[in-house]
Amino acid sequence: MAAEVSVDITKNFPDRVTVRASFRMDLEPPSVLVLFGPSGSGKTTVLRCLAGLEWPDQGSIRFGSEIWVETGACIRRHPQQRQIGYMSQDYALFPTYSVAGNIAYGLGTLPEAERQQRIREVVELLQLQGTEASRPAELSGGQQQRVALARVLARRPRLLLLDEPLSALDLPTRSRLRGELRSLLKQLAIPSIVVTHDWEEALALGDRMVVLREGLVLQEGTPQQVFNRPQDAEVAKIVGMETVMPGRVIEVAHGLVTVEVEQRRLVAVGGDGIGAEVFVCIRAEDVLLEAASTGTTSARNQLTGTVREVIPMGALVRVEIDCGFVLSAIVTRSALEELRLSTGAFVVAAIKAGAVHLVPRRAGAGSFSA
Amino acid sequence: MNWTAILVTLKLATLTALILVLIGLPLAYWLAFSRWRWKFLVESVVALPLVLPPTVLGFYILVAIGPHSPLGQFYIDLVGHPLPFTFEGLLLASVLYSLPFAVQPFAAAFEQVDRRLIEASWTLGVSRPMTFFKLIVPFSAAGIITGAVLSFAHTLGEFGVVLMVGGNIEGVTRTVSIDIYDEVQALNYAGAAKTALFLLIVSYTVLLAVYAINRKVWAIWPQK
Image 1 (cartoon, each protein chain N blue to C red):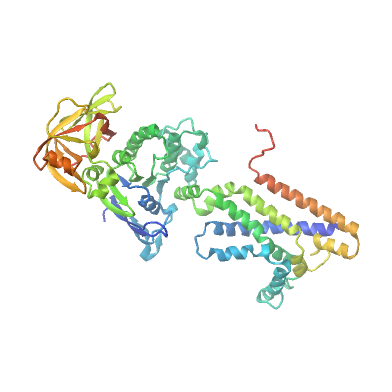
Image 2 (cartoon, rainbow over the protein chains, first blue to last red; image 1 turned 60 degrees about the horizontal axis):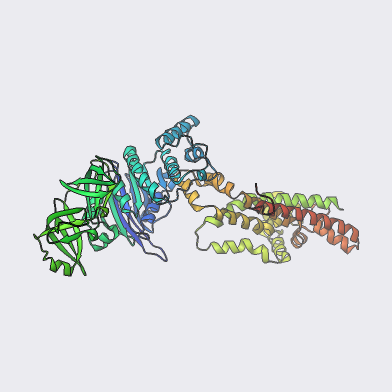
C-alpha cells in the first residue's frame, strides 16, 4: 500500500451541519495539503479528528500502515500515540512557562542533553534567540506563532496539522509570515495539512487543496487547478478568485511592478523585487471587456485575445478569454449581446493595476497544465 | 475548654481534608471533563450532603456500616470490631458529609482551565495524568486549596452526623460541637462560651484564608 494519509469520516453535530469528508494525501514526497473553506465548513473538525481531539461518529483515518481511527473495529489512537504536530489557531502557548519551557514541555521523555540540543535546534531554526527566558505574553504575535511552531517541531512530528496558522496576526505581519512559513514548510519536508479560509494562504502554502463547504468535499486539486477551473459556481464563489497564473516580476518602478505571464506583461501594485516568482491573481468581476481598444483608459492593462468559452451563470455570464493565458471575466447577458461575444470573437480585456494581485510562490511549484 | 475534644476535632478535620483531596481530585477531574450523558446523576449524588439533613445522612451511614450490613460484616471480619461509634467510622461519615465542599471547588477550578492548553499538552505527547499534574493542578491551585480548607472547616463544625455515627465517646468521637452541646445541657454556659468562641475564631480564620486566596485583585491596596 502506498504511504498516504487517508481520511474518510462522518461526524454529526446536534445543531450544526454534518461533516462528511473524504480525501487522501501522499506522504512521499512530503507535501502541503490545504483544507480550504468558509467558516462552518467543517475544516477545523477534520483537522481535530486528525489530531485525535475529536472522534468521528463513523469512518476511518489511516496514516501509512497505521490505523488511527476505525469506528467499525472500535480503534481509537489517542493524540499522544500519533506523534503529530498540531498547532491551534490561537497557538495555545502555556502562559506560565517560558519560551524554552514551552518548547521543552513535550520533550519530557528525552535525556536532558538531547532535550537541550532539540531546543537549541528549533530556537535557531525559527530565529527565537534571546527570547528563551521570556513568557509568551511578552512576545509579539509573530514571535508567538514561531514559538508555537518551535514547540511542535521540537518533537519531530511525522505530520504537521496547522489550524489557520496566520489568522491571529495583524495584516502586515500576516503577509510577511506567509512567505516565511512557506519557505519553512519547504525546508522541513514534513507532510503538512493546513486549514485556511484565505485564498492567498492557500496559494502560497498549498501543493494540493481540498475545498470544503457545509461539511462536504467539493473539489480537490492543485490550488491553481481549483482557482482556474472551479468545478461549479459554488466552488468559484468560495475561492473567489478566477484567474491564477504563475508569473515573474521583471520590472519595478514607482510602486508598480511589471510581471510577465506567458509572454504577456501585466502592471500590478506590489512590493516584490525583480525576479520574484509570483502567482498573478485576477478576479473575474475586475475584468472589463471592450470590442476594440479605446486607446486612452485608466486601466493599466489591456490584453487582446479571443473568446474561448462562454459559460452562463444565471443573470451573469463567465467569459474565458485566450490572451496568451486563459483569463476569466464575468459580464452581464446584455453586455455579452452588445459586444457580440461568442466563441472565437476578438475582444480586449482591461484590468486596473490595483486589481492584479500578486502572491509570492515557490519557484517551480504550481506548474499547471490545463 | 475541653482540649481533648478540640484535639479529636482537629485530627478528624485534618484527616477528612486529606482523604478528600486524594479521592476528590480524581472524582472532580471526571466530573469536569467527562462527556458522559448521565454525568448529572453522579453530580447530584455528590451534592446531596448539601441539602440532606445531617441526621438523615448519619442514619443511612449508620445502617450501612452497622454489623448487620454486608459492609459492616466485612469490616468486622477484617478488623475484629464494628465500625460505628469508632473514630474510623466517624472519619468515613465526615468524608461523605464534606464531599461536595471539596469536589465542587475542585471541579469548578478544573473547568476554568483553558481546554485548548490541555489539548495542546495531549498533542505534544504528554499523557493525561502528566497533563493533570503539569498543567491542570498548577492552574487550579486556588480551587484545590479552597476545597481542602472548606472541607476542613465544614468537618470542624459537624454535629448531626457525628452524633448519629460517632456517638459521644470522650477522647474518641466527642468533637467540639458535641462538647458545646453537653456543656449547655449541664448548664455550664461559661465552658460552652469558651469552646464556641474557639470554634468561631478557627472557622473565621480558615474562611479568611479561603477568600484571600481567591481574591484576584486587592482593590483596597495601593497598586505597585
